Length: 294
Ligand code: PXG
Image (cartoon, rainbow, N blue to C red):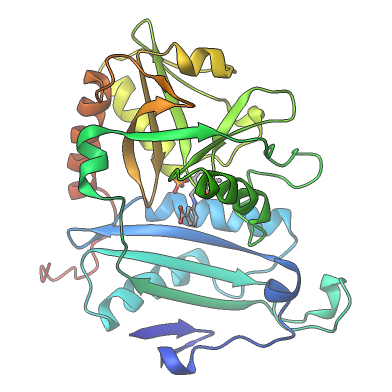
């Protein structure tokens, strides 16, 4: 495995980070999880936009341009001979002293890993997954902005621990007002009276790239889409529930907190959106091997 690390391609054994890096010491940095399908990097432009916006919020200067970053991602895939992959792109604050002050970190640290990913078992996509809501509230935006995909994931990890303790693969997190926000690594959608509903960005969520793609697909198909606040009541009584994320893609939920959703089977709209999403992954994004060597 070859890793891009600050301007070099190195074997994984040499891909190491300083113990003085503020990404490690304080979770100070931003990252993206990106997928490549069929020789194309899905929604790469959107992922880079989110990365650079997050960096701007943190006053973190990314040492390369967006165009260079696109090439770094593509070249990392080429060096590893991958056409279908999970890419982890990380920008940390870089090494500094032991204090919090980011001004003591002169240069951001950048790395890119291209690997493959273990998805949920196929059966979960066919039959649907069971999930729970947990007591850990999503970070309040006035403390730690959920729209920034930062390296500080403890909020989500606390929620994931609650899910794991209960033997569940994912957890629904509410915001501090008690409205549904999102899952630990996925956004949530419900279908009510045929309308596809997802919490708005103002609910305090990460605006998922998969979420936005699914909303685009739905609108194209003439499905009514709404970004609205809702509660667990709406989840329990929904016709369909599903989660979206780069790793999970679109995954149906058939049981939430012991309540059976709809018929207890993945719903029709969910199945349609899964199919359309798969089709989109075949055509969207820049080619890794433009000479046609897919
Ligand atoms: N919400 C949160 C909190 C996330 O971390 C999403 C939504 C979905 O966003 P995208 O852009 O991927 O559609 C994420 C995704 C994991 C994992 O292992 C998930 C994410 C990052 C790293 C790991 O489940 N982020």
